[in-house]
Amino acid sequence: MSIIEELFSNNMQTLLDCIDDRVVIIDKSGTILLMNKANQSGASFDIQTMIGKKIHEFPGLTTKQASVSDILKIRNTMTRNISYKNGKSITWTSVPFFNNEGELEMLISTGRDITQFIELASELREKEQLIDKYSNQLKELKFFSDYTDIIYSSTQMHNVLNKAAKIKDVDSPVLIWGETGVGKEMIAKMIHKTGNRKDMPFMAINSAAIPDELLESELFGYEHGSFSGAKRSGKKGLIEEAHEGILFLDEIGELPMKMQSKLLRFLQERKFIRIGGNKEIKANVRIICATNLTQGELMNNGNFRRDLFYRISVFPIIVPALRERKDDIFPLMDHFIYYFNKKYKKDVHISSKFMVRLYNHDWPGNIRELRNFVERYVALTGPEEISEEDFNNMLFSQREQNKETSGGKEEKEDNLPSHWKFAFDSMPLKIAQHTLEEEMIKRAYEQTGSIAKAAARLGIDRSTIHRKLKKKTINL
Image (cartoon, rainbow, N blue to C red; front, side):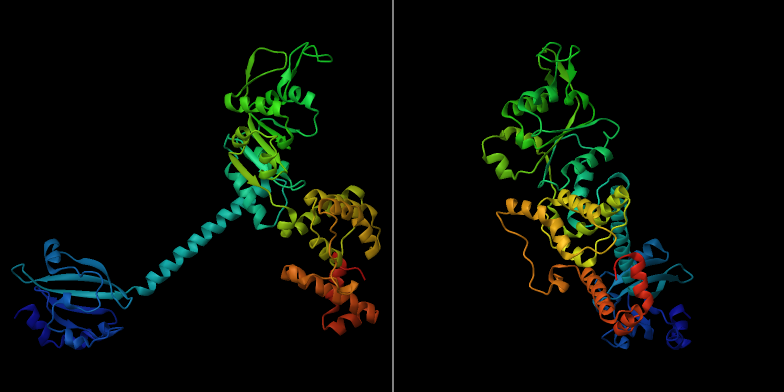
């Protein structure tokens, strides 16, 4: 009796139906002899209709089944993953059975549904990619916090710093754009402090602050006896002093035309000649320039060479104004309050009501204006809460500056009562919630005259109010 005859004589079907995994038995020609009920899972056909058919006729296949000839060639067990049109993926293991003469008689294939495992593996890969992404972001944040003094919270500044970090080891010139007071020199110092020139000099000069007749000697130096008052030993210029390091040229748009020509020649040849000298001096210096002019203002007034512009702007970096990255206002304010409290030996805090006003201020002077205001606020504020009139007086000088820079336009005050001047529509939700909560506590206390009664009226625990008083986020 052959193996196949024994198979059918022992009521194999009943036995196979007790197995959870899929089982298919085919003969050497690929004809299906038996299938268990597990094959019915997710199928749109009756498995009994498949008995006697060829295995390649199995409906729903998207991947070719291993052929009998393949099994016959290797004469060993074969495992393959088979995909089906209904989305299922099955791992099939086919085992060949041979008669006493060594001829292949049948194949018994067992299949296990791995669809869920594949989906889990895909989800795991996605999670790993997210972990890698957040890990890289954390590394960037650690990099910025460890090696820079730049305080920020906004996505805009993160992108600026990320770009600066990518070019920190490049030798080509950088041109930093941005309004007055946005921190252009801080970006230049960050590139120096974190780059491959960090152990070499960082020299800086404001092109607008040096008289034209002195600027050339400041940049290129001079030899003995070059002009009246010159040192006998001569003097190195900033380019020579910055050898192997970085030279930061602020307000590059104010550079005189004559100096533009000399700077362009140096950038092209990496050589220069001191005033009164005739010897070329080599200097390996990376140039970083900055300007508060727009590209149109810089290029269209006829006072700046186009060839120099393209030479210094290989890597442009645009630093957005503070009003365009308002998420940075509060972290900067906290930093300046801490700094000036320490400087003036005080413990001054800005109430949430005034924080909202400052958040909605345009800050035409950017970070420099914010720093000046905080210093004025800390220096002039006593232990008691400052009045709104005093607050307005502190902003007065800056409001006058705003008139000049904005054509006489002042900040618009909203039409809400003075006690409720909140611009919730232009604030982050967390800040609005925080501000409203503290204002309600203050009003409840003013109306009841007691922390316990105020807490009862608001339906909160009195410890909440005491905690805020301890943190000095409110003053009652």
